[in-house]
Length: 404
Image (tube, rainbow, N blue to C red; front, side, top):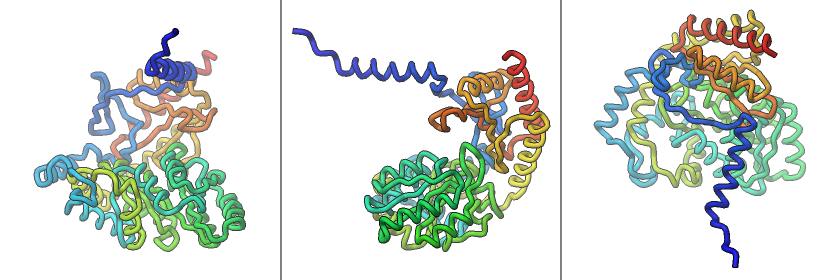
């Protein structure tokens, strides 16, 4: 009688085939061991690079003041929280950070989550269900899409940054489900394109159609608006127009974690119903101490945003002088459109050989045929860093054209 195949061996064979296919299509992703260094530098394999792949937009991740806060929090609170927030994991530092974030965003309350991914999952899952709908921009971050799927609500995707298309889709949903809840979720700054959602127009459409607007400020807070209060504030919007605001602490603020800011009622509802908040261990309190330092620095040191704006302008001017195919963006995210995944990977490797870390972004992170280099600028870069990168980009792209 023939012996049944070992299930684990069969599974490995199927997974190996999938990995081989990804490799053949130029989509295989590999980790590298990176040691961040001050000045937008990173050490990889014993060599130091200029890092143009980090979301550390204000250059705070290596700031010694954040490290001091971390050490002080470690001495007082230990290395781990030991429990969920609703058990014994909610410390005085967590509470202080929530209050500071609420004040910073101009909302009554804020609630800490471990990551932005978990916050977005928790928001959707706690606020809508099977009879409701979540309407999302087609270029929203995966965490927003996964939140809609976790909620089991109907997911409706509207054309990128198109408030009129959102309006049409909201109206069609309302016609079929007049009493159901409509939740509109959008990034403020889109992480792969670097453009900003038409937030005021989205808010107007939501109010007219009786929908609730949630904005993910992961890439906006710290960078956009007065004192870095975000793209929502820069658009002149407040809690009435955007009742649900999500922000992260691991990008411009150089620390770790995320939060949701909103009304007293919203936050209490999330505490009771957001599964990704209730059923997970609280982040270590020392991280809250570090984030508090970062928040204070961001408010007080406007020169960081001023310098970042100058670098963005200098980069775009130099890139346009070399006719590099930049996408439209006024934010620190400056995508260089290349189209083919292999082409993006090859250019990324060529730049690495010259001392620059620039990540190639490929499907499924972006749609097929839109592979790109995602160049991110930070206040820790210098003008010489930016000029050197543009020169290297132009030389490599000229060489590519000559060899085609």
